[in-house]
Every structure is written in structure tokens, then in C-alpha cells.
Length: 531
Image 1: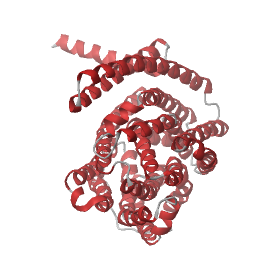
Image 2: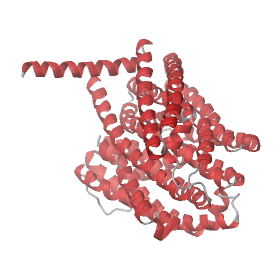
Image 3: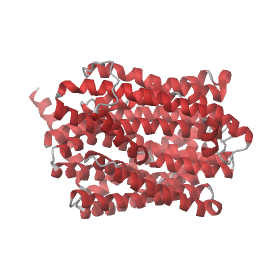
Image 4: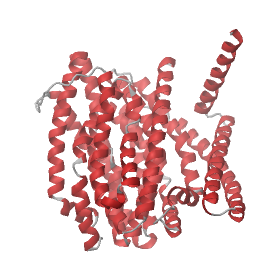
């Protein structure tokens, strides 16, 4: 168990490092988009078009990767290791055929998709949205292969390449935005999105070959394991992408509030999901294969132990991230996005949206872990039904508050709906797999929130007074660099204070980290002494 924990920790660390690099380039991509397009008409059309194709791409990638791993585990147990390549090859072929059909339908029915996702747009913006949807729709074809490759690598405990898969994706975007935007504009950006996803496939191929995968030209829709994977994938299509579905509906309502509202909602959501993409995806990617094996072998105690550790790790990361983003929303947006066409007004309004959006990070992250528990026990229907409740609550709240709180109300509705869905998941899981140790979760929430409040006070009394001092001394690029340095320093000190408070509160995961680091340092000292 201890050795498994060490391996999980190493794998998680590897994914976090690569995800951190990927998100750095992803943030650079969003900064360049903000510089070029601000929150104007082209950005609004791009946001809605990418939400449409991006949702379909994410649905296919996530659904396949999520159902593929448990099925691959079943094939490995029932048919032997030799059947893995045959099943994987068939899944690639079947998924490609289905993705081509979906992409073709998306191109044909682009006007209908634009009416659904951008219903409040003026005719000019809607016409551009249709064009952008058609240009970017083929990316779905390559997304299917990315999902299978990622699942195969994770099953074989090869997490580094899967964690780094967004690096080539974002680099392709950045090259275009820096060098080619003046020549090809926003339409070229939509077309380049297809090349960006293709680059992910090419990036993963060397690792797939290293995993000793041998593709076999098979296309068998009647294969029982493939059929089971596709059947399980149907409800997963909704359950793993609830946040995307809620975001699309929010953007639909935001189109009635003007192009700027759509863009600001999108920018706030992208900033908020940076933490999810770096840390939480790493945790869920690593623990999902381990949970699948535990529950497949009917080892419910081990499965629940992995779940418990995962949820607490999520709380450890997301609570301070949420509080920090709420307190420092304005400087974060200013430093990350306020360039070129992105104005100071855009910064202030986007920051307000981020404050309402940030709490969703906690519950969305926990939901990601709990969904993996359901999928590990071959239950994809329950997350589907909970997901539908999530959407229903979000839609109802949106319709109630959109004309009162505007775009901020749309963001807050997502938070409330996701929180309710999180509670439902815990209640149903307790009935499905027995005692979950809810008191330990409650203690973890209280401790992390207390430490987070102390951290927030520290952030407020240090950053803003020092920012005013810098504003009186510096201007232009020097002031921006100084603010960035101050933000990073305050964030680093706040994280240390947060960890210190949790250590004295007896938070086990923090104590384990301290013990691990001290053991490593002690071992290094002993090696130096022997040398």
C-alpha cells in the first residue's frame, strides 16, 4: 500500500508538472486572444463556436477515455493481456467512424447549432459563428483518438505524455496568434484548432509505441466489449461534461446581454479552470485506474481509501485557490489579460464574474473524483441523472437571476447547481458502497476553510497596500512586472501560511507531505555524510 501511494504521488507530480507547463501556454494563448480581440464581436463569435465544437470534442474525448479504462481492465482480466491491442484497435476504428459522422452532421447543421448556442446574437455575429463552427468541427475526428490514446497510456501507468498532451495544442495556437493572425484573422484561428488537436495525436504516438501497442486494422461494431464501452459512454457524455453544458447555456443567455458579456464570462471561466486543469485533472487521472482495479477486484475498502485521499487532496488545493481567486480577482485578470484590445473596464467586469465563478471550482473538482468512483463500479447512469438535475437547477436559477444580476448571476447559478449535485453524489454513493467516513470530510472542510480565511486576510492586508505603493513609484511595463512579482510573492507566502495553519490543525495530508520532504532531506544528508 505504501509503495502504491509513492507511485501514485510520483505520477501525480509528473502530471502536475506537465499540466503546469500546458496551462502556462494555455494562459499565454488566452492572453494573446485577449490582446487581439478583447471582448468584441469576433471574440464573442469565437467563444460560442468553440463552446459548441469544444463541448462535442470534450464529450467524445472524456466519454471514451472514461469508459475505455474500465473496459480495458475487464478485457485484460477476462481475455488476457494479448487481447488489449485488439480491443484498443477496434475502439480507435469505431470511434473514428462515429466521430466522422458527428463532425459531418455538425458542419451540415452549423446554423441550427449557432441558433441554439448563440440565440441572442445579432445577424452579423451569428453569421460569423456559423462559419467558425464549420471551420473547427473536424477537430472532433482527432479528439476521439486522443481520448483512446490517453486512456491506454493511463491504464499502463504512463502518465507523463497524457499529462503533457496540451503542450503541442497550445503551442500551435500561440504560433498562429503571434505570426499569422494579421493574415488570416479569426477564421484562420478556427481552422488552426483542427491542427492543434491533430498535433496531440502525433505527440502521443511515440508513447503509444513505447507502451508496445500494435494497431490492428479491425472494425467490429458487434464486439461485446466495444458495445459495452459505447453503451456506458452514452450517459457519460452528459455526466462528465456538465460544467461545459452549463457554461454553454450561460453563454446562450449572455448573448442577450451583449457581445462583451459573452467574452467576459468565457475569460472568467478559463481563468477559474486553470487550477482544475493543473492539479485536479492530475489527481483524477492517476487515481481512476487504481480505483477501477480496486473495485473490479471487489476490494471496496481500498477503493474507498483511494477516494477518501483524493477528495481531501482536492479540498487541500481548491479551497485556497477559490479564496485566493476571489480576493485577488482584479489583479489576476489585469496581469493575465489586460493587453491590447482588452480594456481596464473588461478587467473590472471580468473580475466581478470570476468572484461569483470561483466557488464552483471546489465542488466541480470533487464531482470529478466522485464520478470516477461511479464509473469504477460500472455505474454510469447515476452520474447522468445527477448531471441532468445539475443542468435543471442551473437553468432555473439562470432564468431567475439573469435580469437582476446579469452575467454575475449566470456564474453564481453554476456554483449553486454544482454544489447541490455534489451533495447528491455523496448521498447516493453512501447507499451504493457503504460507509464513506463523512465526518472526516467535514473535518477537512472546516480545517481548510479556516486556514483559507486566515490566508485571505493575509492576502488583503499585504497585496493591495503594496500595490498602491508600487503604483506611486512605477508606470507602464515596469509597474506591470512589479505587480506580477508582488502577486507571485504574496501567493507563495499565502500558500506557505495556509499549509502552516493546516499543519498545526493536524491536517493529515499536509503532515504526510512534511514527513515525506523531511525524510528525503534526511536521506540526502546521510548520503552526503557517507560520501
